[in-house]
Length: 634
Image (cartoon, one colour):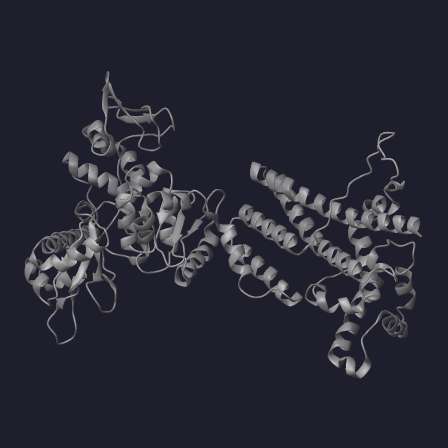
């Protein structure tokens, strides 16, 4: 169906904007206009104005602006065509003609809408009648007030196979079956789908009943029963309470996602009207898109038990490919054994609001989940964590967001496993006379040595690669701890690279044979084996004192210090190529098309690169200081 500009202009002209907006927003006359506190953001003094003559509204606080159609799409959350249809019906205008097939489909849908609406009214009558006494007791026990039950049009389906069918017989069995209200089984008479249940109407964004959820009264399974898929109802595209939560979410500046109907109803009664719920399934891509139309960062408020957390991580994984700059998810984990309904009833709305003030970002949820999946005691398990994090980041389609996740996961991984060391403090001269009487004189730290000065001149990767390889030759037993990383690392080209491969291969072979056959592979034995393969010259070259000397390259180094320093050096060596590659990509992207996001990412990666340089310089300088003070002590 195509809508001409003339049709839309006529529609706007026939719509009194102040009357439309006045249905949900209290307006005050202000000269030839109307004013109110803005429904799109919280404010204490009115800055929202409606002008009937010009047919638009405008907020001087948040710049919200639009006409009658925009009001229904932005404030009510209606699709554009639904907004036009609603205004046209109110204005007494016929919609432009559609093709015969579409007209036939619309007519059928109209009948289904009417059947569902009449079913909802009938269920409400039953709840308020004699048959609904037990259902009303259930609502009272759950603390649901009568006005709340009316607002959500709650009802009751008697435990009968034909009462609804008889009440709506004017529609005929085929239509009631198509609406999901009757069940049809071969060679049996159709009968009521919902029996002996508290009934909860499910509405579309326009507030029309399209399906039902039924909660069992007393014992029985299933506890909740939903309508089947129908021409009106697509479970994967519908969110419960979307019609009411849309305007509330725009006013509150957030949307809450909870697990079930009763959570939504209890929260609305407690003042949180911006809550929705999926319909018994995990959040779908279509539902996430609907949520992002309402808020850039929907807040998932899920139970603290295992099913609730499983649902949270499923939603997190499903959202990853759809992330965009500024668009994400946040998570609130409720106390163990409590859902939102329990929490607000036990501790009041303030307790729930306190949780909403500090939700966990999506990246925190993913990191915590992967960290808790398995123990992280071995190199293989640590490499598994790194692999899983990279796999998750790789799911993100937006390149800007993907790079940020890769960098963030890398930073957290490095922070988790890098050896915590005191930052290097340069020598600060003491003023004359500040040494206390009787205090022995101690020489100040020496100047920065040639090692740190020569790092950039010689190239970080090659200098560090040679030092790490020397450390592995000095301490072959450490190769096994880093095998997962070393096995995939290309340390260097040429003779140095071939020596590295030989060292790793020898360590693997020795590990496979076992110490009972040949004894532990120590440095002297490793050098002897390397000599038989023609690597003796380059191996001894690496161990010369004039090479970059770190604790793990020295023969008589303290074992614990050597091990920790080698861990740090390998962590730097592994991280540096990844950061360099990401920086090259970011630089190329910024040169091709400048943007603030690309520039910010480039700056962040430069800082990450500088941080790795500083870690290496710190490592070298700390070693030189130790050697200097050791010599003075001797």
